[in-house]
Length: 188
Image (cartoon, rainbow, N blue to C red; front, side, top):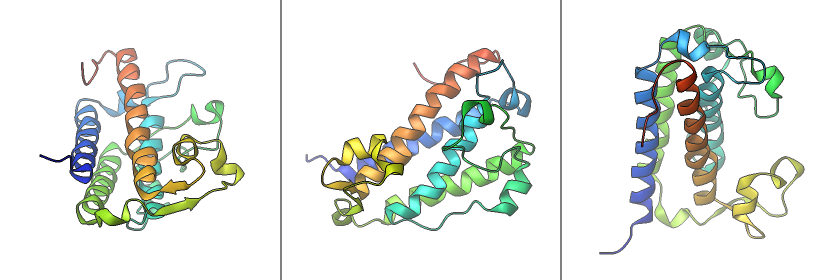
């Protein structure tokens, strides 16, 4: 039996998405928007940040267009209609979701978009460089630049770094934050 990288990536992405779905199914808007103290980001930040980064970076990896727009920001009632990547913790500590059902609707659409792309992507295209080296200042200090190295960031690197690994990082934050609101972790 040979290792099938694409099938592994598809399974891992579905598994990560299922963690978010399970976490969201066991939280309320009160849990998500809980303000612990200054300097501690609410779960709402991690949820919105992960979702919008996944949605906005997939097109750079060759996937479908971004879904998030002003209409979605209004529908979800976001306090800050931004993923916050270039904002400070002091700014993003104010992120809140006003309409949790609308958030869950967009989350389902984005997850389906990503998983559909991975189902249809040509495995031979995964090695194509989507961000060539040398990197500009906005990319040079990122984890994906470290992974891509001197060759550039490949489609596979982009999907792994920008969506999968990034999503797991923020799931870890959500698992810790769930303890602050009296909920348990998602995995052992």
